[in-house]
Structures are given as structure tokens and as C-alpha cells.
Length: 555
Image (cartoon, rainbow, N blue to C red):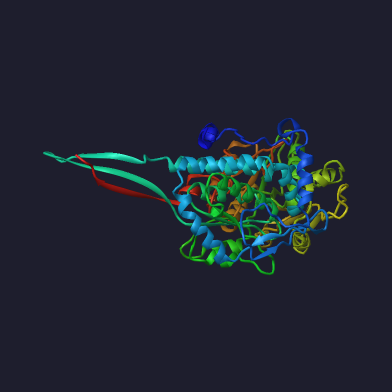
């Protein structure tokens, strides 16, 4: 059985899913022994521990010019000691160019099969990758397993499906017959989707696989060789992914340099050298707006960005305000607010919130939110695992910046103990009251556990502020609570025009932070928070060009 025959049913299911937008998951998100094996977790943890203080030699990249690595565990408070093979920009680009001819001439079916096979191999390392993600990003175990493993793999599968679907949109060849009266003009025509060139994927420190694999797999699927430049603080998760891709490439007779890892260090970063190189044609980036805007301004590059944004919560009315406060408390605590979808600015009318049990005042809601945050973080069986650890020490400083804004402090940020890691760097959310007239103070993202409760004249002003912030400063998510259909329609219109997705009236087990592969378009690409969306047709069709060939048909 060919590799394509092995995976064609999986590919079809994924393609159907991206069109139907219903729930679909190729890779189960529950780390259950029944699914992954009785010893999968133990084996993964042991493999992660065995990689510490050693050279990472899984990559099929020969003759390294140096071995580098500066990762530190936010849980252990010490370096991981893992070293990775390092190469100059010129070496990486030269190897990518040499491998490109073979890869772009590999059939679409075979490319898809190789990439799906690599995800299946990655599946066997989900638990190892979970520990790698925990100890580079600070994510809690469950999030590290799900987001860096199954959810990331589903997003990669989604990119393969979209890419395959678009590459197969038109016939490969056609006999063209044009009647001209007494004679016909007859041509044999064919079309080839030609890849744009070397792709550069620039990773982030908080979600190193989830944010990187969609662009990586979209570029590879469309025939482009790819260089993965991970964040110096989170290399291991993507090193695992790249190593599995390389192994499958080699097994199928293809140069593994089609996909290369390009690790670097904080003091000698090669990101700009690569990005500005004339041979780099495609760039995928997740990170700060400043660097993202610099990349978007480079000449002769096609750039896909996810940048910073200011996410809002609009609270107008609610059926059960206690469930609302509970849901939002979890949302701001999850991974200590280090998610691009985490809410920051809460717009609450000064006249309070309408509920079936009467009006809930601004102060009453603020206290409910604070009580729910404290109840969660002080629960030893929940708090440390929901909060995780702070990836970058500078993130803790954002809570201090918030205090200097001058509003009433409803809740101080503090560290809590993690029963499994005594040196874990932790921070609970700070909650600060602001006034709508101080708009200039809440127009920027304070990345991390920061909540700003902003008192507005009414919900109309809340909507105007939230939509204006999204349009001018960017937003990736918005949560809204209202029982009024007219207000719901207003919010949909205003936030829709600001190209910001809205989650209405979420309570219970679903939160504004979460985006599902095969269903949710992550980032819209329509406001300053990013110019691309995971994953829509535009995300893949910009990575190749249709080229036609024709000649007279033999009579």
C-alpha cells in the first residue's frame, strides 16, 4: 500500500471538515491511557528528562557550525541544558534551495501523504512534547499536552487539507477545442501550481507548536521548502516536530533539508538575517506588533502575521451573572493570561448589569469576579495547574505597569505555590478599575495576568470603545454578554466591522480563549492584530502561483 493510499481517507475527512465547519478532531485531546497507551505519559516524561543537558541529535541536519541552546524552565528555575545544531543563514538557505527542486516536483498526493504521516509520527511523541512545552513555555500539563500536541496537529492537518483542496481545484490538463467556423483551434493545455520559494516560520515563546505548525505545513503542502526559526526560549517542541518531518522525508527518498530547524540564541539571533534575505519569499510570524510590522514592511515578501491585540469583554446583561463571573475568572487565570485570546479590557456600564434577579451594580460584579479568581487560584487542586508558570520574567512586570495606571486596585497580583515545582514562577491576575474617559491608558496590550474593569456610561459606549480599540489597535477575541437581541446585533455589526470574532454568553466549559481547528478562524486578518487567519483559503493560495502551459493538439 502506498503512503497516499494509507492516508487518503484521513485527508478526505479533513477536507470535508474544513467545508462543513462542524466538530472534527483527527487527534484525541484527552491524554488517556486507553487512547495513547498505558505507559505513554511515563515514557514521554522519561524521554524528555533524558534529553536534558545533552545535544539534541534527532534532526537530520549534518555538519553543524555550532551547538546552541538557552532554554530555561519556568517551573524548575534553571536551564534545560539542551544544545541544538546551529547553521548560518546562508547555509540554511543553500540547503533549502538544493532540496527544493525535488520537493516541488513531488506529486501533490505524495506531499500530502508524507505530511500526514509526519503528524502520525508526531502523535507518538505528544507526551514528550507536552513536557517539552511545559518546561519551555510554563503552560500547565493539560494545556501543554492538548495545545502543543493534538490541537496543534489538528491545525497542521487543517492546513494540509486546505492546501490539498486548493491545489486540486483545477484539472491538471485539458484538451481545448474552440470552434472557428470552418475549422477548430485545438490545444492541449496543462496547469501547474508553482510554489513561491523558501518559507520562514518564526516561532513564539508561549505557543511554539500551535502557532508555528499551520504556516509550516501550509508552505510544505504547497511545495515550498521551509526553515523553522523557533524562539530561543522554546526550541524543543518544534525540534521534535521538525525531526519527525525530516525522518519521513528521508524514508521516502526526499532530502530532509526540505524542512530545517534554525535555532539561535538571545545574544546572536538570526531572524532578521533570514527574513531580509532575498531568497526568503514567505514568512509566518507570531509575536510583538513592532517586529510583525517590520516584517510586513519588507519588500518582495509574502508575510502572514499574528501580532498583539487588546481583547475586550462587553457586559450588558446576563441570565446568570454568577456563571458569567465564574467563566471569565477562569478565562483570565488560564495560563496566567499569556494567551493571545485572553480578555483584558472589561467594559461594564456604571448603571450596572441587568439580570432576571435584578440589577447587579458595577461594584457587585467586580467583587464577584475577584471572589471567583481568588476561589480558583487558592484551590490547591486547580490554581497551580490552571495558572501554569510565567514564561518570561518581564511578563510579571506588566502587573506593576497596570498598578501605575492610577485606578482602584480590586485585586493585587501575587505568586502562589506550586506543589510539584517549588521554584515555579507564578503570578495571579491583578484587577484594576478604570474609567472610560481614561481611554489613552487602556489602548495597549498588557500581556499576562492583567484585568482592567472599565466603567462606561452605558453599553453603547462599551461597544464603541471595544470596536474602536479593535479597529485601531487590534483584537483577536471579544466576549459579550447580553440578553437583548438588538444589542447582540449591534455588537455583531460593530465588532464585525472591526474584524473581531465575538463569543456571546459563554458559561460553563467553553471559554473565549479557545479556538477549534476545522471550525474557528483564528485571527481574522482584518485588524492590526494580524494580517492572516488560521486557516482559510487565502492562507494557502498566497503560497503558490498557477502557471499554464499549452501547445497545439496533434490532429
